[in-house]
Image (cartoon, rainbow, N blue to C red; front, side, top):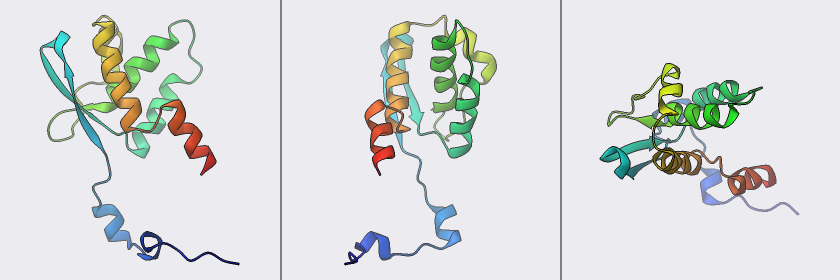
Length: 124
């Protein structure tokens, strides 16, 4: 027996509606070590691939590259423009581990990169 689609599944979207949707979640994260807060935004599909490529096949400094690349791909200004570039990864690595971890945790949350999020995605 076929199940009935839910109301959300019966609202067929148009191309225009999909492109008009503001679908990137964000979160303001207080970073007392830096004296303020940053806006952490969910990665777009293109940024997610960029991040995955940046961390693929890394060697001894993999942790720093993963953390730095995620901060670069997730921290934006008030208008949603990136604050950092790939050239900033090494410099970010010299900043407070506590601050970077706080931003990293928020970035993994809004982009669905936490282990539980990835497990749920596989199940669904």
